[in-house]
Length: 231
Length: 382
Image 1 (tube, chains in turn blue, brown):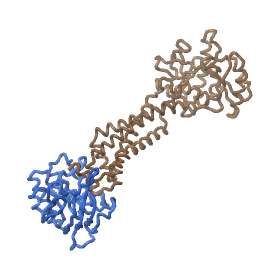
Image 2 (cartoon, rainbow over the protein chains, first blue to last red):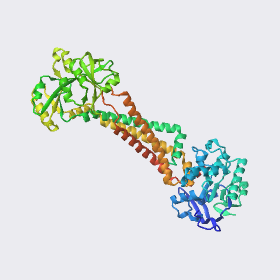
Image 3 (tube, rainbow over the protein chains, first blue to last red):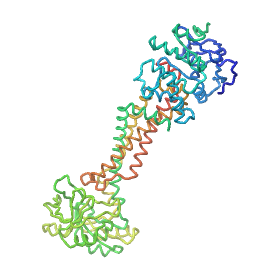
Image 4 (cartoon, chains in turn yellow, brown):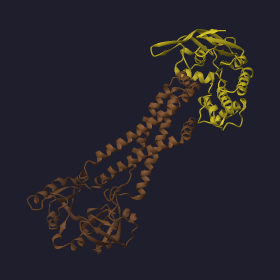
């Protein structure tokens, strides 16, 4: 791992981060001077009304968007300084993404979906197989590897998405409303699974949610309102 | 190779689109091969031409005959080593649609003038001995299922009536461009059957000269002899004669090139549109791949590879079908294009064209996919 900062320092460090979007001639401010530190192994929930900038903050930390101003440093790397190619390699190595709508590739089986991040590594086919099977068993989907997303329930699809997020053993998991599209039973199972990943595997998790019950699963909850953090 | 499964999964899961796109490309490449084969087959006569063979015909038109009496005088022109002659017969076999080349030829000279007609000694002798005998090309014999000794009734259009020819020889062509879809029979047999006013008339003379460099001088000398006669001649090399024959059909080559290009361009637009639609439908998926760490260059390659595979599959099917079909059915366009076969260079050109189509059709969607901004693309769906 290329963490850069020792175990004692924050895994995620944001300093005076601003983000604005341009809509034709209008400038829409989304984040206004966010400063935040997240420790390694922490499970953090981000809450706030729609349009408050939760997902934007998550995207900046996950390296899929860039701030207008300020510094985003994750796992020892200043993301602003990386070019698109290096940023892609950094994401592959350090971040696992979990989306509200699962975002599995519909034409690939559960196995092939989970294998996708490993295609970017130098692992052999047999090593990839071992890893995929381990990830699928971790989320309780042994024996469902040949199923396509359309053959799975919503809860199962999200489990496959979580297996895909953890299969390459990333430093950080970012989850954008992971239970937002699930019924309460499946939502509960996903939250238990995330908690296990945090407690047993020590994964640092950042989760955006509207659901106060989901937020209770996290160690700490931060509130965003109009682009400003309120603890 | 590890990404091939991803590309193939997309093609396999969108079976209908894959089938239709591959089919449209296959049809385009089939038509391309067909049109180009028309051109190359018309040119086969040019390629098969011998630079030491001259053709002498009536100066006004091919339809007017020359007197048989010219033969001896032509043989005396300095530089001429052999004189032969023949008449285009223009008949059909059993049905009007069964048209192919038939020539009544001067049998004693034909094999000296045309060494590319390969015939066994026994068959040659049998042909030379019998006045109603004929020889036919191997491709033609195969097409109609003839065998030696068969009576082949040819119905004449220029020379009316039914002409009962006996097959005494099956020739092979010494070069791929020489015609194996023709029948040759005795000019004497034709001549003796003619009424008095049509006897001793020759369609064209073939002159063999010692060297290609003699051709201009001999041509000029022959035409000069008959310049002021009632039946003037036009003498030219066999190549020039064949070229003139092709020109009689108009500028076929340009027309076919325009047609072929229009077809390919139309299909290219369809394929580009299909690939762009496919990429647009997968905006979220491409954004997810990039989120997982797939670099822009890799995404570009994956989308382009899909277009390339579709195009290549269509190309192989279209070109392969043209090759096999025309070989199987011995297509001759009603005798108009006797040597109709898809050349290896046409197949190669077709496959290269398919690759070019794949590149062009994949380029636009591949670049769009590679440049796709991740965050906004995910937001569109979430």
